[in-house]
Length: 100
Image 1 (cartoon, rainbow, N blue to C red):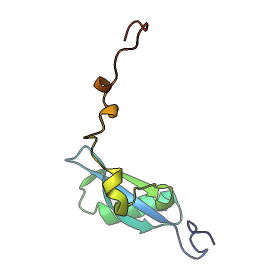
Image 2: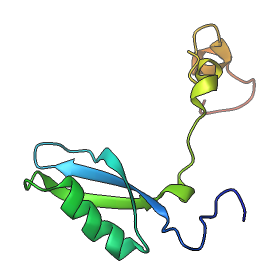
Image 3: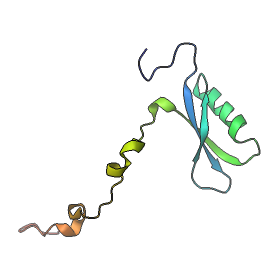
């Protein structure tokens, strides 16, 4: 059994995102186990939109989500301050190149 595989007797994990009637963005609401996308969607509706607060539900298999490592947030989210090469004003106009 590989790292991303679930045992044969366990349904895969799905991440649930709900867009509320007041919001524009889908927000992570939680996770659930389901055998397929259709069942995950039905279960997500029943679990996370009980009071008609949702207008749209997304379900995404957990195994296809790629996330940054919270332990290395310092380097990953480091500010561009002090990295002038990331700004266009750092570079001079090239000689002989029109329209720049």
